[in-house]
Image (cartoon, rainbow, N blue to C red):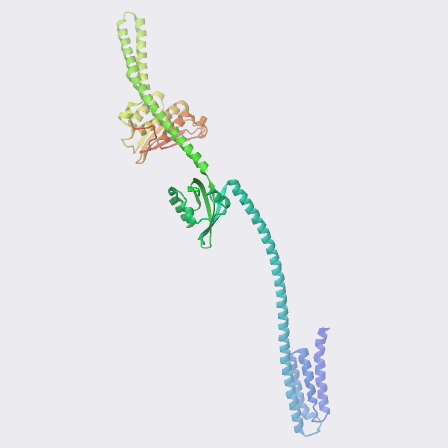
Length: 505
């Protein structure tokens, strides 16, 4: 319907223009027929726009001029010219005014539509803002409930673990403490929160420098965490031990702006550790005294065997030799006496070797290396095992306490190899440095499953070696696997802090 109207309107307008021209043709000059073109052109402007109206205005202007020549005479021509000029001016004035009116009307319509759109958008924005506000309030309410629940849980945790919590605002230098923290430090809930400077003054003088330096480095970003155990004086003057742990919150530049932490009273644990430390020191002292007494007893027994039993056996062998020579007339008795003489001599040698193993005199007079090589040669002859000895960087002057410790470790290791390893080759390395001396004993035997925590798997011999090295402030390592032999490393510093009970002879 709209398309048909768009096609019909121009035809009707053109027909109206022709009708007016026909009237102008038949009506005498002087009559203002040309004024009728104005409403037709305005109708064209309203229906089809300015381009169509201007085309019709040009057509109507031409017809006005043509009417001047075809219209019948009815008055002076000058009046007709004036009349048609007025119509021409009125026509184009009306068209131009109509154009301006149409433009202003269109501008007003666009402004009105824009205002309507803006109003609709504002209404939608207000609705969205209202919805978002409701959602935000709902989320805030949920977060508040969650936060309150978290705070309640945190309060229960701090009460269960007996931790005191603090919150230090580094920008304002103000600290907020929980009631349990105040109770731990002897403050009441009504007392004002103390400043960080007041807190640092209560730290024990022996711990203050270490704690504050660590805290400063952590806040500066030079440490990964802040965790310290230190002594601090309560308000009532009593000293307690606390475990202090803190975590810093930093801004976008990495600067610490807040420190949140907790403190735990560990006084009972520290007292228990001190008691245990005293007991361990006492046990270490007793162990050292026991080892010292053992060495002295070994030395005494070795001396008695060497000076008494060995000499008496040697004298017995000499006497039996004399009897052998005096019984030449009785060959059977002479043979039995000669066997007894040989047995006495062998027994004297065995007692001498046993006394030497108990306390090698070479260790005191010629040093660790000579005594160790002599023992290795004796062990190889006695057991038939191949023993390789290697030495590197060993000083000729080794303190007797260190030499005795390493000699006993080597002696015990070789004894274990003989009893349990089923080895064919043993390698002993003696290594010296400016800091200490170490010995390594390695065999190609069957090895075993090593469980340091299980006494039954290591035996008392290994425990004895470990204890000797520990008393000398050294390190002891054992590496073994079934079928891959056993390797023992013992290292002792050259200037160890001697435990109570061990003194250089």
